[in-house]
Amino acid sequence: MRNASSEEKKEKKSMGLPETSLAGTFVSVLILAAFMLIAWSGVFLLFLSRN
Image 1 (tube, rainbow, N blue to C red):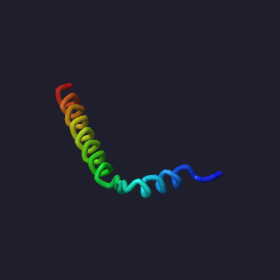
Image 2 (cartoon, rainbow, N blue to C red):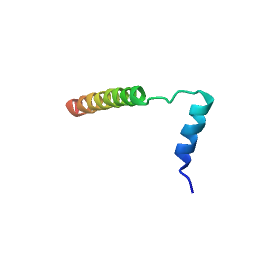
Image 3 (spheres, rainbow, N blue to C red):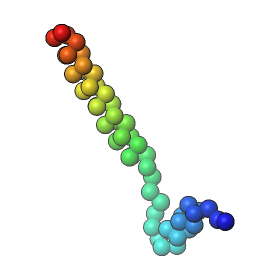
């Protein structure tokens, strides 16, 4: 049995498609997660202060 991912890479190279880097996607997800965490923390602290 061959590795399916290595066959897919060979097919992409033979078709002339560049391999994509997911570094930008990872950074975007981290930024979004940080924003959501900060927003949630802010709302939670607001809830605690009004209690």
